[in-house]
Amino acid sequence: MAEIAVVGPGAIGCTVAAWLAQGAAHRLTVLARQTLAGIVVQTPGGALQAEPRIVTDALALQGCEWVLVATKAYDAVTVAATLAPLAGGPACIAILQNGVEHLEHFTAGFAPGQLLPVMVDIPALRTAPGRVTQHRKGRMCVPQGELGERFVQLFAHTDIDVVQSPDFKTEIWKKLCVNAAGAFSAVLLKPAVIARHAGVAALMERVIREVIAVGRAEGADLDAGLAASIVDGYRQNPSGINSMHADRLAGRSMEIEARNGVIVRLGRRHGIPTPTNEMIVALLEASLLDAG
Image 1: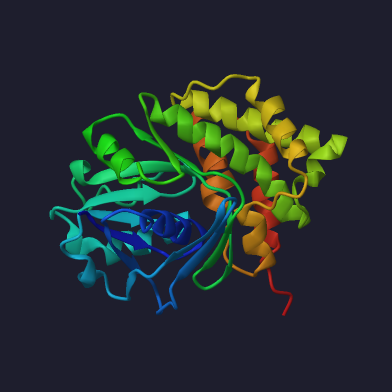
Image 2: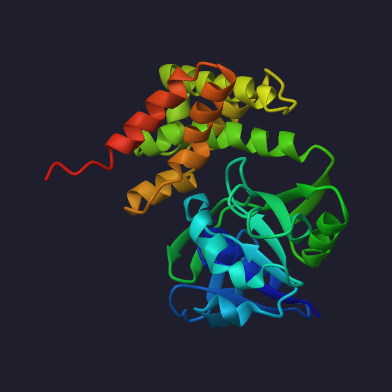
């Protein structure tokens, strides 16, 4: 029986926790800012319910075999500091976040053997505290190795596909291509139907081509055909609302830096122009300005 903790009961955290709680002898704890009345996730196959132990102090996670960080990327610095008491201990820290810098804020405080970056593709929307709608089957990817294999086994009883990859860097950059293009929905406050507008589709392809150029400079193996295929995927799911769009609608902070800002920053490091991503960053940052 594994002692597992999930940090952050948002859309991903609740979905992962609910699946882990189904039919497996895991002891599950959720670290939250406030108490929750259980977890209910509406999945494509029906509702999942879970009653994990809810704690608000990271010290309560000592003794856990796994700690799954499912907070937004912009909270990584705070979470790394919060989990500092677990450094050097037996816990494996799996970081389930967007972007391409999963380990950036954890390596200073944790041994490399404790850390596992996780690419997450689980379309889900938080509708209320502890309440989530999962829109389609989820997928996660981890680097190949002993720690990755152990993580895969945690989810063997679930309906989430978890795989190991010998080229994890390429996997996270492919996901970033999707997320970066989806930022237009957050700008326009409209779902993926915007990809059916020829002008927006062209802009989305520009964004992705910039990601491909920067990703290749970072060592990712990205095919030029990704741009057209990703935009077509958005066209095929016109009602889709991505998490950045949902966050802006709800007045929450957005992962601007993890999705588009990182492309601009790394592009400058490599001398690669990223004007379309710069435009997105500027527009999203301007949307936060208060005229008062």
